[in-house]
Image 1: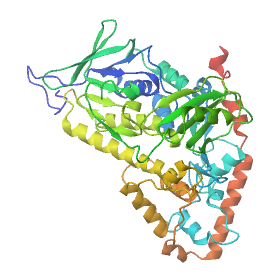
Image 2 (image 1 turned 90 degrees about the vertical axis):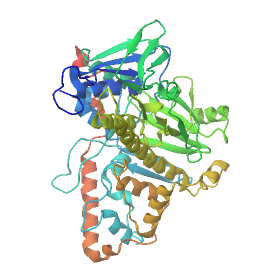
Image 3 (image 1 turned 60 degrees about the vertical axis):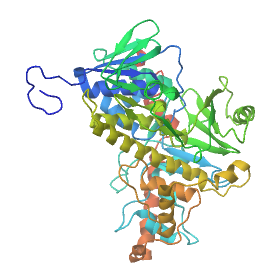
Image 4 (image 1 turned 45 degrees about the horizontal axis):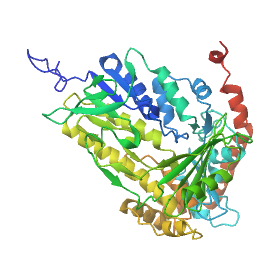
Length: 519
C-alpha cells in the first residue's frame, strides 16, 4: 500500500512509510518521546534514542499539571508505582505569595470553582454578590484550594451525590527519576538506547533533510524522522537546520535561574509555592525525600551572587548541594518542525516554569506529531500546521505568564516597577479588557489554561471587573444564598473526610513500600 494515498503500490513505487525515528537527547523530553512514540507506533517503527554521557539535563521542572496523568494512562503506568519510584507527591495547584502585593497570597488551584448554575458560569453570580459584607472569597468554593489550605488529599471522583467533582491533581517528582522510570517502561524491542555524543549532522544535498547523525566514536545513526531533545543548544533544529529563535525577553524579562535541593521540613504541602522576590521569584516543590527549590530572576536587577544568597537564605531546610545555575532567553523557535526534524523540550523554546508547563509542552507536541504523523516526505502542509498549532499554544501560555508580572500593585523595587509597565501582546490585552468590562473569559481553540485558571490569576493579581453579566440578575438573591451555603457545607464536609496529604502518601505510595519494593 502507498503510505500517502492508501492505494496499492505499483511495481517500482517508492515506499515512503516511516521506518526509523531518531531522538537526539535523553532526559525527560527524550524519554517521554521514546515511551509515547513506541507505545503509539508499535513495532512498525524502530526508535533510536541517542543520549550523551557528557551532557547533563536541566531537570528544573519537578512540578506538573494534570494532563501528565494522560501519559500514565496511555503507557499503562500504575500511579502508586510511579510515585514510589520518583519520590513523588500530589499537586493540587500553586500558591502565589507576594505577587499582587507584599503580604498577599492566592491559589491557582486545579479543578472546578463552584458548580454549574443557570445560564452562566458560577463566577458570574459570585461577581454579582462579591461586594456584600458577608461574601466569601472565590476560593471558598474551590475544593482544591480548600484541600491545599488543609493539606489534605484523596482520589474520590465525586463529592457524594452532589454535582461537585473530586480533586483534580498532578504530581511533584524528581525529574531525573521520572526519566529513568519512563526508560524502564520502553519496549526494548522498539526502542534502542545508544550512548554517544553527536559531533556531526549529515544532511541530504537534494532537499536538506537530515540523513544521519555521526557520533564521536565513529558510529553513524541514520533515520527518516529526527526528534531534537538536545536542550537549549538545539543541536539539530538550530545547529544544523538554523530554524531561528524568537526572543520574548521584552515580555518575560527573567533570564537566569538557580536550582538547589534542601532537606524537607514539616508536612508535605499538596501544592507548589511561587514566592515573589525582589527581582523574580522562588519555587518550592515538596518531594518525599527532599524539597526542590529554585530562584528565577533577571540579571539586570540582581547579580548572581545576590540571587544565590537570597535563595539560600529562604530555604526551609538545609541545602543538600551547591546551587546549580541556568541561563536562558525566554522565547521560541521560529520553526518547531523544519525539514524532517521536530524540536521538543528546551530545544523548541523556553518559558520559565512559573506554571509548570515544560513537561506538558513535550506531551502536547508529541500529540500533535501523532495527529499529523508524516511519511518520509514530511509534506510541507503537515509541517506548517504543526508549527501553527504549536506557536498558538506557546503564545497563549506566554500571555498567561506575562499576566502574573504585568498585573501587580508592587512598586517596591526597580524590577517590579518595570514589570508593571511591561508591554502586553494584543491577545492578552484583549482578554484583560473583556474581563474588566463584564467578568467574561473567552478561550480560543485549544488553549491550555481553562476559564477557571484565568479567573483565579486575574482576580488573584487584582484585576476586578467593572461589572458582571446582566443575566446574573435573573437568579433571586435568596436562592443564590442557599446555593452558596450548600456548596460551602459540601466542600467543608468533603475536606474533613480526607486524610492528610502526607498520611495518604504513607498509606499508598511512599518510596520504599509496595510489593515491587519488598521483593
